[in-house]
Length: 327
Ligand code: DGY
Image 1: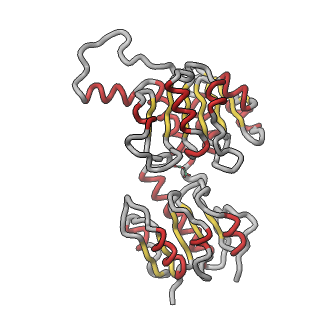
Image 2: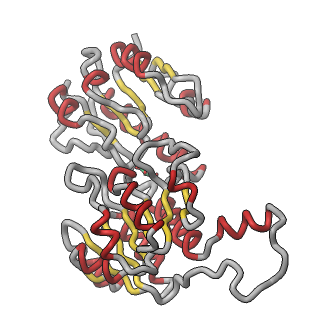
Image 3: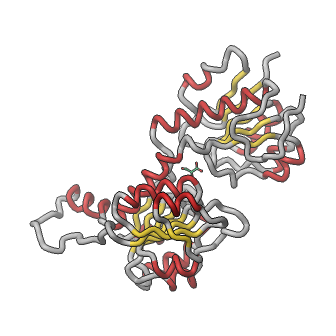
């Protein structure tokens, strides 16, 4: 009997075809709707491997569902949707997709920064709605990006790559991270700052820190109050890193100038969410790594990780580093 891999979302047919000779493959049939939890648990009972999405809660009920599960490969660099403790306890390898999405996610983060600063979405809507009556001196005047100060919170690979983009705009670069990034300091001129310094001195505050117990609600009302009134806040990490109500109030009270958000506390965000009523908010549906090339590469990396574990080898990108091949 071939080992069974369950994929929790409809992926392009070539993805499953690539592994069908060696593995039994099951796949949830919908592209835009997550697999129902009860079905996911049923599948996890039979599965040797799961290929999961960042929107799937891979909690105890899934990880404990059966005895066969050896690997969960998450189609994302983030893995806050997976209960690592339970995976560790059960000897299940958890894999993510770092590196292959770094440039693409940095591109999107910088695009979001530019779009928010230069009011690209508002401007496009004005034209589409036939409201462009004449050229006028301050029509949709935004904020300059070049020569400003960018403050990156979470200087992982994506953070460093955003910093690299910022050098092309002659920006001053501040960063805050658990550890110093000496190479980024040397090569990009990035300056390590305390969180408080970064928040109060930056024109663009870019949140790229992973969601953990210590980063949950890191951006509180108090933090937004410390920002410049002209500051633009960008979040491309995870929604719960910010207190959304605090962000809303900071925008309404004009304590900051705008926000570009690729991620939200609860995804998908509902169309009547108060943040979406504000013209100075640019909202995207969590598409940081979403280019065709990168998403296809991420899918292949997930399959390579699964294949490695099921073939008794070390996976390429395992999150629980203590995980060891069990024969
Ligand atoms: C991820 O992969 O974790 C990021 O959210 C990129 O979209």
